[in-house]
Image 1 (cartoon, rainbow, N blue to C red):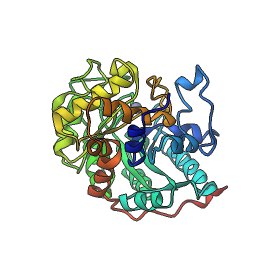
Image 2 (tube, rainbow, N blue to C red; image 1 turned 120 degrees about the horizontal axis):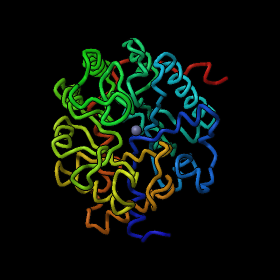
Image 3 (cartoon, rainbow, N blue to C red; image 1 turned 180 degrees about the vertical axis):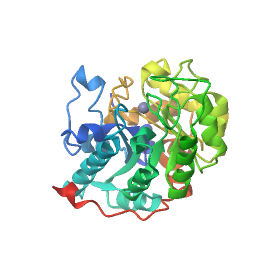
Image 4 (cartoon, rainbow, N blue to C red; image 1 turned 45 degrees about the vertical axis):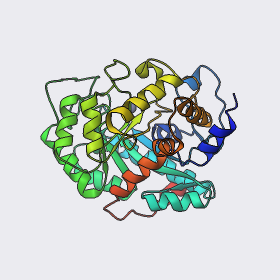
Length: 344
Ligand SMILES: [Zn+2]
């Protein structure tokens, strides 16, 4: 359904940056980000939500691509992450006029000035380090900007909010604490999505710089184990970071209006500087009606205007806040040029 002229103007003037989509795993298996994909039911419920044509259509300026791996066994996970990084680099090399990979806020702005879409890189689940901090440094040198400590299983790092090996009484392991400290040293932003509450606050206490929760709902808007509470929201905001709201109805308790409810709850608790987008598109979680793919993002701007959010606050929420976090947490290692093997 077309949106109002006013909403279109507000949306077109924004620089939307989404904190989490799981697309690289699909890309490493042949999904071509440069082509427009049909959104036929039912497979589209779980993946195929993002490509460059639909990013342009929905004015999604930049996407953090989350790389994830099956945790059992850990051995081989680092190599799988490198394969996903290769897939992103291959795509950027194939359509350099359409997609640029970036690591800093300046690089994001530079690519946008050239009318390109921007790819940023994050990792979901520090089991992918295979217990070795050298892998983290290697990922940072390949442009990875955030590290999610946990995914859906326990690991040498800590324990998930839910999933295999859950243990709510235990926080981060000593290696998990080392990972947080090393992330700060390398300029890799720590992502607290999926971490259990105790581990969450263990990471907060180490003060690694601005923290993010790349994709989550909030308990103040809907009771669900996957969602974080107000104290967690405040801790992220106090660090200078942002909470990215997921677009998955199973965690939000509803569709487009529920996304707005969760976004507004973060604003109420911690201000309009603490909130961001964290779609979880391509994450094998059915997205909300009205936000089923990147092309539908303008619907969110219209829904926010209807709920009396100002255009200035909407621009912060859509992407300005994430740019601020990138500025606060610049990469602290030199990023290598793309691997030549990525061109193969
Ligand atoms: Zn996730």
